[in-house]
View (cartoon, rainbow, N blue to C red):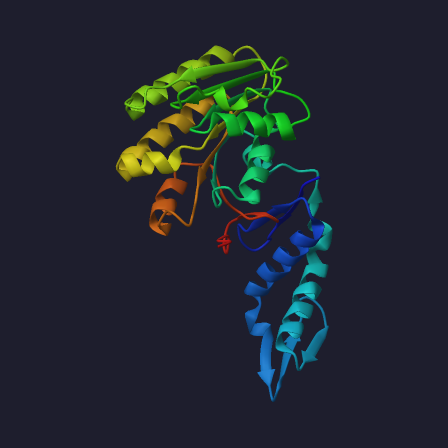
Length: 279
């Protein structure tokens, strides 16, 4: 079960499998719109609600702020939706930039979330064994078809212990010397083989940091724009990963313009819009 809260005053949106995480994030965000409603007098802080006649005063500033946040959330609690998917905001088609620390629980949660609608799953990855184990461990059943594009030698060598007899699996080896055009053409060809056979295509592209390191930013941006257009035409849902600890904010801002949605991810929630940097 995934919950969603959308701010009525700005594009801020938060999703989580935990309702308490939604309450915390929504209350903190709403407070950012009403900072002027918190004042200090003597050794106390005072707050007054912009929506009703309630007010409060507290000697403990942190406790006072927390109480005001909880109260603000009470006014919007009925607008929290359940049973949603993050990609519902883009009709489950297009590209999503996932800003999350590599190796984090939040990133693994995002992977599962964005792959779960796919009957046909396409990975563009340097870690094929990890992606295969992710599907085997977390999805209820293998997709109708799983395709892996990778430059890794012996891509299935690290999963020899798994029983893949139930997996309809195809591995495409990419030459590490290929340019972006050739990589894009290969992805387009694979997508073309499946876009008309029926079934939702879900794509994970986790080599974005390597591309930024290898090519200039403008070249990467143009590649992403063309690729996202191609995948959208195939009604595919694609997510791309970038680690905010390893890239400058200016680089992330440029990359984000190539996608339909950009979210920041931690272990508890996904956030889009203002104040979406989760550290």
